[in-house]
Length: 326
Image 1 (spheres, one colour):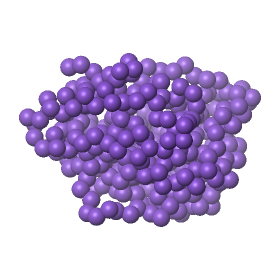
Image 2: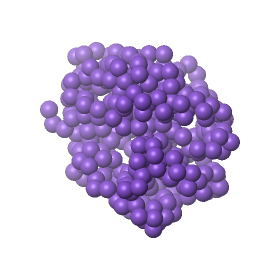
Image 3: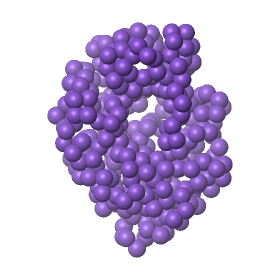
């Protein structure tokens, strides 16, 4: 079966599959007022998840990241992981989580097939963490990170959204942390979404500020791996951990795009921004629809744009990142 490829020659073998848009944290940059459901939620069920995974695997998907919202809020999260692991062709299973369940479930999820975990920790200062996330479970999240390292995941990464005036001056604390802790620390530029224009204007901080400081202190850019995403990864011989920079406003950021997104209600998103989603759920009801699903995926790639146009001030149709899995 032909792999997914767009008209710019980019190949897509990485699926970010959201299984809920609900979240129990109230991060300022995403859900400052908490999760506000729009009526009764009808998230993809296990059979629909199995069929969407099968369809994507047929067209070359090798890595699947389970996202949300907070994906571990789903009671069948372990079963979702097992479903991904049972999908022929999928080689790597990852998730992004706020980490609140990780300390108690890290081994169980590893046994189910999970091999990479990204934990959102926007500050290593307890008060600052609570202010940004609207949640006071900093110690619980950090215990989860420690437990993931103990279990032996292939990769443990820490996601930090850069926020001017909130954590933008905390690089020294993060550097002290990764001197002895073997995690990939990823600084992510704040991205403007439909509901957060004023917040973006007040708190956006360019990743180049961090980049210049790293280079001045002897950090060196690592070669890009074949399956790497848009992060620029830096390492230093004196540190156990690495630093990645995700700078969506930088030149040619989209040139290395290799991922597609499916929302928790079954819509294909070709980008975090630019469009409102392409319906897939009507083709997830029966096994006989797999050929039609594959055909729709190929047709959809013809609509993918060369860039997200964020640099032109276009925040697209996404109200907030939790709505399609970040």
